[in-house]
Length: 610
Image 1: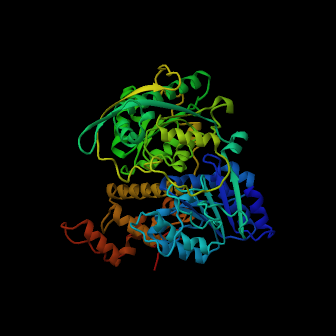
Image 2: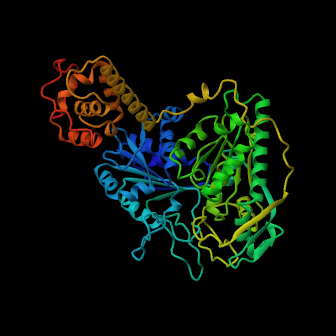
Image 3: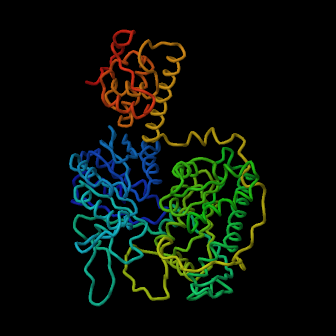
């Protein structure tokens, strides 16, 4: 449907410039910007594409969608987007860039200037995160969703065309969503509906029922676990429930306790055993010869401290040689979080990922077959995103009928109501609901946590047969983690840039060592810092600002030339002198250059910067 709309826009057959795609989570909306961008750019209606995603871990996935060779061939496009930081020239010679809500809010003027210089298709992912803004709104903090909306709104106004995507068209707080056309409420009914006939709009719906009928997503099997819990309340009185499913007004405190005590460990063990058994069966059936198609486990924890405890527990159940590589954690305080998420998506290992919120929304990892939903968030949009991590069809896991999506969760009344909604979900109408006091008593983990002290909890029932233990969870594939699995990792622009920068750094370092060992420099310092400064003068800019083509040219130049031939270029460079003083503070002044290097004029065709 989006392809037809894009074709109509490209052929000037419609005045539509806003496309809203309400696609059930896991329904393949990451390909929509590729389809629409290719059509509009081929027709000359846009020059660039900007794709805004809600979190940094999704930027690479957006790059991969445009780099996918199958879709490049099918659509006949050569468009490439790069994951951009808030720096000058975010596209770097390519046809667009990927950024995040937070990045736009941090530098709104930079992005707006870029939109005013070019005709952009703006693709906004998971639009429901952005509430509509009014003159009476005030942003309470930089990370507030309203501040994101205020920063992105000028980009929406300046874009030549807009593609707005979401897996849900309602917000837990009942507020309208940014930019969407709503009908005026009728009478006394508190219902807010999308105006499907708004001028200039095309609205595409792809419900869970449609996706299942077309085998675009997997059906979900829920594993509900019940249990008891005991805690001390704010007055330090002992409270308890015999069953989470009958906790009533104590659900919030009981669930908070259960997720941090014995109940969580029992539920985690069942999810782990089930996934291990699934992987063993897949391997015995002859699948996964290169580590693909076996299935993986995603564990969603309530907070970062508990996530670390879950990781320790999981690793304790694995053989020592496997634990470190098979189970990993991705939380915001870890610097390697993005790399861990990427490895979980693209490689056979790790097979278990523990996260809080970083890896649940938009994570495109078809290998996930099991999710342990150990969280107390109960808003419908959030849970829809969480279960969708396991509903993607894995092309390496055999026939559709052989695949499964298994969600383990606490058996509380709130999750049960959500489960019933999933089973009956249809349509794309967004409504503002009058929330009763006993409904959805909490929606987030980071707002007010209960003032209680968890004491203990126990799992008492699981609604399907307990899976028996299987062989070692992470038996390595015969060919290790390389081979075909490594070849499947897309070479996106940001990955190529990173590799080229690393390559340049390696060549520079090698020349420094060679010149030091062989006494090839008669005068002046020989250091990595010095050679980097010379290279920057030779090439006209720092490699952190170079385009892909410029990085490739720099590698070629370094393979033909010696940096030491050009040391004279920084003889009178005040910036180099200042930075050198900082690096050598307390070690004396910087040696001055009195004459050019002994090797004579520069070779090659690169001219020094003036």
